[in-house]
Amino acid sequence: MAAPCLNCSKSVEEHEAFPEDAVELINKYTGGTTLGYCVKCAKKQYLESLQKLNKEKETWNGYFKKRIWNIPTVTIQNPLNWDYEALGVVSGQITMGMGLMGDLSSTFANLTGGQSSEYNQKIISAESLCLNLIRLRALNLGGNAVIGIDMNYSEAGGSKDLLMVAAVGTAIKLRNLDVLGEQRRKDLEEVSKKAEEFVPLLKYKTYKI
Image (tube, rainbow, N blue to C red):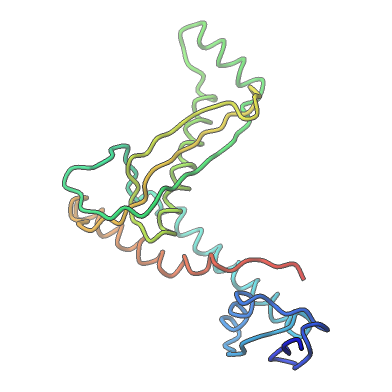
């Protein structure tokens, strides 16, 4: 016999049950303690809770957008005097359209001995986004730095109009933050503390109802 919804007591064969993380999300923003909801009876509560979650995520995104650079990212495999625990590999990929004008501009600049500032700026922006992605993924693992970073550039799908920039490195938990300097240590401690509040929000999935 199918288990009943703990909210309305209807059989889950009659009313589809919410997954566990959706139930937890509803309880988080409603202050409830119910162990199970069916989709029909808790649709409104779920949508309202999801809206609150997304609003909270937007606030956090604004915070990390300004401060994520405080997470150290280095190409060195074993930085001098760093005491750390390796947590796992993190990667980030960005695909961007260069456009015909970008290619023509770059070609002309190369012929005249110059450089295409527009083309280079796109690459710099993609590199920055890749580094921020692996910083966020390091935070998700409980890390506070990324070492051994390698960046690669390639045409996406064989198209000269699309360039993919990819970065990969090892997320670590740096123990002796003093090696970074006093101010950087304080900034990194703040970001790491905020991440402990933010990361748990990422476990909630969005369900179509």
